[in-house]
Length: 461
Image (tube, rainbow, N blue to C red; front, side):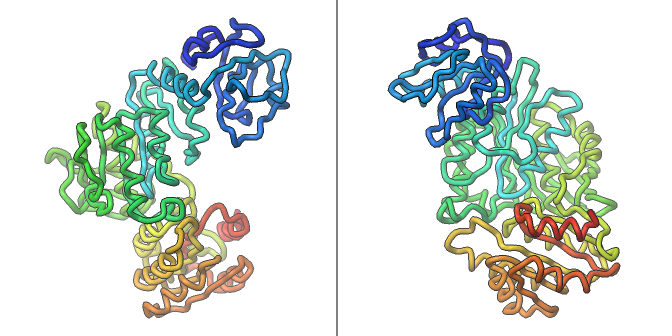
């Protein structure tokens, strides 16, 4: 928080009234779920009606202050705590959020997209950290539950903020933006994901388009010039500045002459007819998109391409993003388990021949969650793509393993195809064929704990 405030000042902000305790009680931190209380002098909004209130935790960190809605029965009165009553919790909560955010006149980025948002956000953060005090989403911890915490970690010392604003269902991206009020937005790309919650690909695209309203139809919007689904979003109501980045189509920030080099990608960036040679750690054309979008982003707040390029060259790529190591039986292990959806799978398969070079290519593909009623179709298509993109051996895993395998066989995959329901089956098939002249791409979910054990074994960890 930028400064300590007491309950009396807070009551003026949220239209509250102290009903028990001390109105001069100083507030050091503010949370909207009791599970996030970690220090004394916390203010707790009893905001989420679904949460089982942890009164023991509040008492453990007492003294605290508690905001509750009039008419709601309190299960416990803790002697050291100050209680503030409001007539409308939703209204009071958002009055505080708006009050807090409006204290800071700084650039705020909102990064969304099916793939690349975490890497791009980390690149922007890394580039800016050299000269700016940056508040950002930590890792891929981008749940809306954490929004208030991220917001209140902005202080008077913060120069810029960079937040991931994901789409899990329609309305969620707009909800994120309600906290952060971004001034600069970005859509990295729009592929296929979260169809179970969105209902259809059209609804998913519309949900990504909420970034425009999230920007209040102004500011700066960075878009992928090559992305067909992004191009279907109406920009008619957007009154701000649009900046395009891309590789294949005309763009304000365009990459050409892309090469795979040692541990990364080298390319020429063209901006206003000026050419710059850029190196970025991490493999794949998608990593080039991440890099050019990050450079385009930092340029919006005044950083030069030259300075951005120097910082980008020192970027440490995120784990499990086409992470290459020498593992079991000296085989090359390519771990791409950070996220799993058809879009990221295609990007990994595209990069595989360039990473594996002349080695035998084994691909392990796991079931992708959240694809909704068309899940069978999309898994079938994933198998078809694997068959045509250079895999010598395909191993499929999980609930939809058969569909992936069927797609590969129907598309006349030349090499063997194995469909596995358990990790033990994968291990029996895989270990005997891993040699020094093989490269294994693992494209599955990092949330599968049993598979994670096998991956660690394959990587020699």
